[in-house]
Image 1: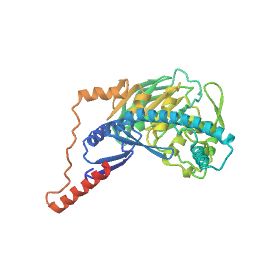
Image 2: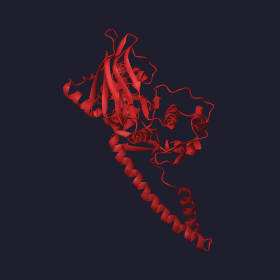
Image 3: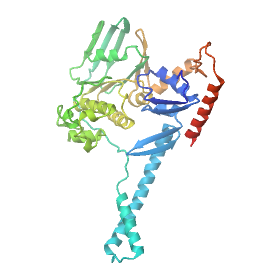
Image 4: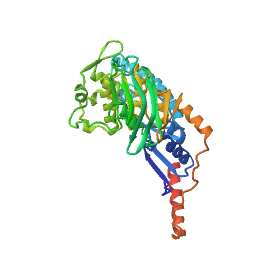
Length: 402
């Protein structure tokens, strides 16, 4: 940003940023005079900074004016219009097919033209390509009243105080969100609950019925030479859903947006986001009743996040999530612990957006620099350079406007 470019290309810019940094970035970009092209899964970020959204779907690029909310409405309208058009096309196809079967096939120019039109219509036939509305309906082991109990916990890591006399009792059905400044110890806190990081003093106890799954920021080592379905089959060939029905690994893969043609794909051919999705599905396949999620939205696309959010909304166990994704926290957490650093932890009962509103009302607004001056006083600025920059800027604006 110090370079003041005409075009900023940002690939998942909110990953690994705390919410203060994200808020600063949103306000900075809202006042940015250049063009911004961003790839992101952060839906509130899209709402705050975008004026156009490009959706890449099934090999086609769709353009929508406005922010994420406008996109959701626009996409729903587009899909509905395509379904209506597809229905009309189906009706026309049936009519033309009936004519083709009854036609004497005389070699008249008019009939040949109709036959050619039918052939083109037949090539265009097919269902409207839309994102499927799927649900992951997994059963789970019974969870008792005692889930996680933390008493007078003190934790110091690398000379940093993470916990200082912290108490917490987690019950079945709890939805706890952990957020706060980077470096305040949120991931270390999850490591302590998972038994990977000992406390300096105090107590952490897990209930006897707890079956925990821990989705960490770093994906476990996945053998690249294995195929997708084999990687999951090592855990289980099938699982039982909430209704008591047996669900195969293939069905679960499709529910988690892995179409059938990808089941035999070698893992090394998957993208980073697809590997993260596969890793998450492996954890859910173990049918845990307590989930620890550390920045689960990083590298996951919006479709996968929607599936995960729906799964968590129906999950009967306890969920503890570390995240800076405000939209995700609003969907999955109703109890918040905000890590301030040096062992200070603030509790808030409610949604994360509600917490941010109260914080905004009680704190001064974030200052955004109007312009970053990166020229040193000893460096003269040539008029020709400024003229060239203005001309390039005008050309770029003409290209973007067109």
